[in-house]
Length: 390
Image (cartoon, rainbow, N blue to C red; front, side, top):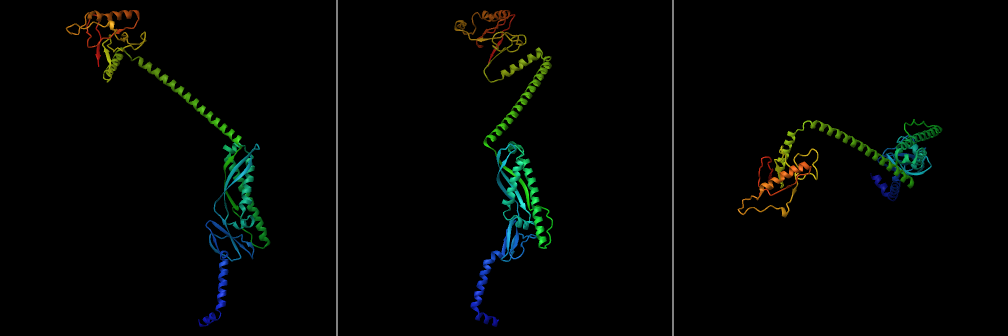
């Protein structure tokens, strides 16, 4: 320790200068010595004073040490997506604009060959031109309508299949060139590749741009197609509706045939009484006249204008009319007993007019009087109807 201390004391200026030079060199070459490979990337080693690109191995993600004169080039080995606009020609020679998206992933084991033969700009030198050429060749087999609507998926599958075949052929060419070079250097050959350098996953049409007039014509055609379908559905609906009405008519006919045998006078009389009870229980103001005719059914005032309809009630139709002032009966007598003079004559007039109207086929007309002042009289042949006010 004493000798080292004496050496440092005697050579302190030189030691200080040497330390500063070493620190400068380390700081300057530190980025080339300590290489960081990001997540999802792989590294290719390139040796400046040796055989150049190392093709038989690669560096995984993380921090890696290398000599300062060598280089480690990182490549993204994850799934990548590229969208590109292409000008393609359809089967009828129409220019179409298409935006095509394709996804790919590079092979980790063959990353050295990719760097050596295709280069870091392999996307613009290999993939994009190749996809464009294949898309133009496959789209030329179809019309604009197929590309625009129905056969787009078929074109995508055809482009993907042809592109994969060509990428496999590119990998074979690269392996052949590397085998010849390694043979010339007396290096062991590389193993056979089980996958292409670039694995193409899928090819998709994001959009197809047709000329404005062609696109408008296709849209009108599709619109008329769906309008035609709409009319077909309407016709089917009307046919089903006609079938429904025919079935309903047959049901009504069958119902009438079955019920007609069971409708008797007693049944009609019972239904009339039931309707009279329901009408009497309602809250509105009304006049119910019952007890007319042999069946005792209620009378509906003025149901028809003119002659009675077939199947109507056998009682004559009544019409309520207001009594004009000239025909108003005399006032009650001075004693106030509520009996009109000549009431027997006034009460017998409707019966005579009823018999006369029945003979002549005219509707029966009856002058109604207030129920509170009408004297009910019975004759041996005819009983007058009762008038109930509610």
